[in-house]
Length: 522
Ligand SMILES: *[C@@H]1O[C@H](CO)[C@@H](O)[C@H](O)[C@H]1NC(C)=O
Ligand SMILES: *[C@@H]1O[C@H](CO)[C@@H](O)[C@H](O)[C@H]1NC(C)=O
Ligand SMILES: [Zn+2]
Ligand SMILES: [Zn+2]
Ligand SMILES: [Zn+2]
Ligand SMILES: [Zn+2]
Image 1 (cartoon, protein in one colour):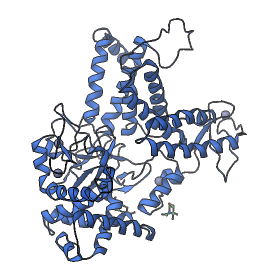
Image 2: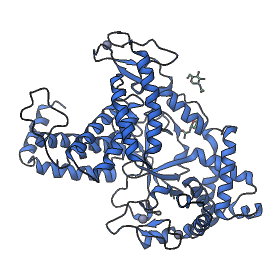
Image 3: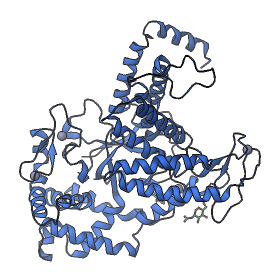
Image 4: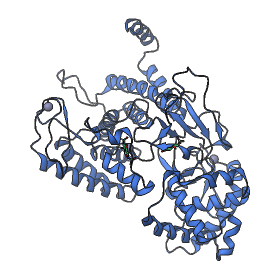
């Protein structure tokens, strides 16, 4: 099923050019997280069309685009459907009526392995999915055993003998499968990087980790791909990869500073990362940086409990507000954890925490790329965008644009050009700038040089246009050049065309662009 397409027709020195799709393959198993079951199709994982999604009338828990998607999924869902109904009938409350995605994913692996046959290629690939990602710490054993119990209960297995049709000789085999599952699962995302579930893909799981990856995993949903082949998972080069270079992806969020990356890798994958970013000690990491106390334009590493002496790398000014910064970092992290845990349950409270905390972090002089300010800004943007869909006011729209601009600025100093996270953030900013203003303000009286952000009227549209053009430039790398940046690339292109018309640049602008191109020596 997997289709490897390593290119061998490129120039000799660069084996793989940035933007090239290295692998495009359908995962062996995909599962939506519980909150997304009614929002995406459980077969192709796509968003609903105009017609909406249709619910499985038996379990009433999973949804499909149409009859075709439902039929495609039925061979596995027929087992799942019964299991979900059994689970719901014994659930203590309605919010746990469906088991979590990990349990549903493991059960799907077992049903599918049984259906394909224990000796099939499919089963062989799953079995070969070894813990090359190093071994699991003994501390994880307990949680894996707990999960094994849930899987067994969900699948209605009542004795060890009933495990053998699934290729398991003992409960220990199941715990072993769970260990391998934990280190080999990928996040399933939408075409614009929202995490909506988990998936298993043995071929892509072979890539090693780096916090400075040269490849990324995306689901671009390219036009023309038959629905039955979706979700199509792409491994895309975001840097030129030389003949002797390994292809590496990031297993974790690389916008986090070193200590938090190391912690996440240790907890889930049980290894200490030795990548260039983790070992480089000379330069200041923008993920843990603050502005120069004398505002010279330089940056300083943030102080830590162990190392309180810090100075600007440019003018050498010493940071004297160490306690304030340490406090801001600590309460900022606490507030972030709290707000993230509240995001789904009580978004008003989450927004309150975030909007109170951000000014504190900014006044402590943290750069927009510094953790936890960057993560806080991302959350703020998400919460504001959710609000925009219910009440579009000028104030809310402008607040959202400011959050999006700060988030993009932060990412720009951390991630390389073409990283999909960066491209999507820019696209989001550009799209927000292109939204019709409910009550545009009048900038006419504002003195030059003090123009407020975001601007209003045509200046705003122009900024939106330029941001989207930049975004598209990045999206066609991160989501694959062959795909034209996938569905998000197409969406951005459509807005660009609309703005070109609105700005009247069709006739006048094209001429200007030609002039510019002639003038620019490139
Ligand atoms: C991953 O790294 C190990 C050594 O750390 C190496 O032996 C293996 O070939 C690498 N795998 C890939 C797919 O590059
Ligand atoms: C990391 O790399 C350095 C030098 O390249 C090496 O000395 C060290 O043993 C490595 N550490 C691990 C955990 O692999
Ligand atoms: Zn579908
Ligand atoms: Zn069902
Ligand atoms: Zn690293
Ligand atoms: Zn300075």
